[in-house]
Length: 233
Image (cartoon, rainbow, N blue to C red; front, side, top):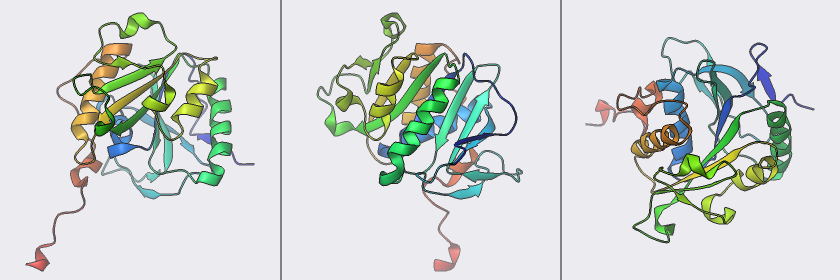
C-alpha cells in the first residue's frame, strides 16, 4: 500500500482552503495554481504519489537556484493565508484513477479543511449563452458569497466539469464546503485566463487580494518551448 501524501514535516491543514486543479482545457487550472504559488509565496510541504499519476520529474519551476526536484503531484501551502494547493502536473491512468481518488478523498476528509475549491476548464464553444460570464460554478456554500461575483451558477454537474471533478465533489460535498469553478476558454496562451481566475477567487473567498502585479513563475518563460536555436539560420 502506497503512502499517498508524504509531508516534509508534521503539518496541520485544519481550517485551510484547499485548491485542486483538474487537468483540462488550456491547463488553466494548473496555470492558476502556478500563479497562486508564485504570487502568494506558497511553499512545498508534501509530495503526492500514487501509481495512477503519470510520472514526471524536473527542476524547481519557481526558483532557478533551488536544487529541489519537481514531481508530477505536490502540495503547497501558505500558513498565514491558510491556503493550500495541490499541483497536479500530469494526467491519471484510467485503470488506477478510481483507487487514487478514493485515497485522496480519505486523506482530504482527515484534514478538517475550511473548504475545497475544485478548478476546471471547458471549451468556450460549449457556452450556452455567449453573453454570459466566462465562469460557471456549483457549490454547497452559502449563496451570499457568490452574490456579486462574475460567475453563473449551475446545478448540472455534467455541464461544469470533466475529469475527476465530479466524483470528488460528489464524495466531499456532504462533509466539507465544496465549490467547482469552471472557466470557459480556448487552447493557446492561457496565462490571462489564470489571472482572471485568481482575481475571481479573491473576490469570492476573500483569502487573498486581487492583484495587478502578479509574480509569474520562471517556468512560464518558455511556456511554448525554448527559443528557436540560431544554428538553424
